[in-house]
Image 1 (cartoon, rainbow, N blue to C red):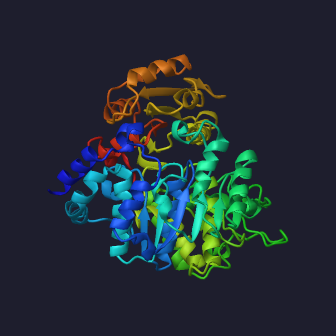
Image 2 (image 1 turned 90 degrees about the horizontal axis):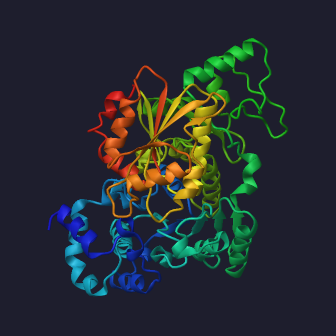
Image 3 (image 1 turned 180 degrees about the horizontal axis):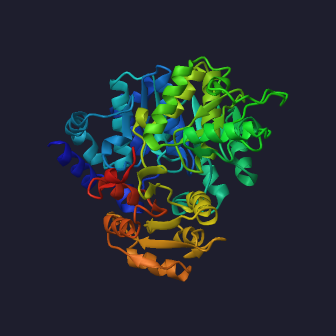
Length: 524
């Protein structure tokens, strides 16, 4: 078999949750343990970091991997689902597993695993761990597939566990309350192994505290460092505009305060305001970094070429700024978890410098191939896609939509598709009405469906949306919905197109990027 035939064989012979949902779900570790024994327990040959949670797992896993790569580690990265190519799930040093390795793995081992009938994810996990061992990696960042306690990645003995947050997703498998879901996620906490928790409140926090106490595992809540990280409103502006605005205010003798500018640095006694009147301002903003101004400017230049924006925030020790490439309001929460995890890894003996953190976080997509998280695909009009696919994810999107409908003259166009097993009504209730905001801006809806069995039919989604007072038109494919949105957005007018609601909708969009001529619509 060639690569395409091998992938087709895997999709057809091993039940795949990504495509068919619950029919592919196999809770428990019995099959995984048999596979692990057959392949010689490969995960014991390298260090691991385990990343779980409801949302933000991918962003955190890719960001941690990027920092470790810059620090000189040979890093394996195992994530799911993929968007365009199965091999996205398994990477070493940012490079996807070779096609021939996938073909050879299946050919050599199908006589063993066919009678065992593993799920697609179980078999993929075994392949990833075997590949990482064959590549003699130093450390693997492993993302949980679903839940935690019974997830097949849970055979590893990691140096660090990370749980990003808890939300209402996959409730039919994990439980119908946040507390029950948290207990499943907490199942990755290992005896004596440090665990970093992102967002956790009330009963969810108590679940994690009790599990950590039971396992004698040191627990750190990322919110503990909230006061040391300014993360609420990341400044999104082109670099020249930042300079010009700051210079203008200084010339007018306006006082720069930390409330006004999230990126103005203070000393511990809140006494020092940086003088930004000369051209060396960028040096002043990095007084404690062990890297040169040339390094900093290279990061700025890279980001400017990528998306014409710079994201600024304060590092976890409150002494410097860093550039975080990943965009989207929800990254304000993820960055706190990421930086706390990096802090813990340093305390465990990982050789990670401040320079590694800054360069890694500024280059996540290039270092790891990360896609689909508030990814800007065009600027004329602005076209953004994001894989957020549940109620929690939609809450973050709501913040974005509110900005465009309340504070600008932008017309908003939302291309939306969902899968059948989500709280679709809950997601729809968070979306803006067709006439919305103080300026009474227009919001246009294009309802669609991805090319997977789990996708809710576009017309059914349109009817549900109509009952939530969201009016729009149904389109049978993602490409037709995006084409309609583009047609409604002349390049000389202020429009934004958002494509999301499902990972599979984003996958369909990215697969058809060239056919939609999005590259021709992008500045720079």
